[in-house]
Length: 45
Image (cartoon, rainbow, N blue to C red; front, side, top):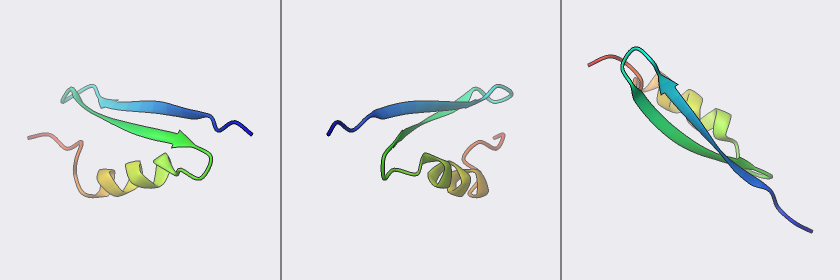
């Protein structure tokens, strides 16, 4: 069995801040993104 993985890059176009997340079987990039969004990773400086 093969496992597919992929990378998702999320960019705030207002601040040009980007973060990459790895997705695939057993990986939850949406949860990681949601957590960082709540922590203000993409907020303006």
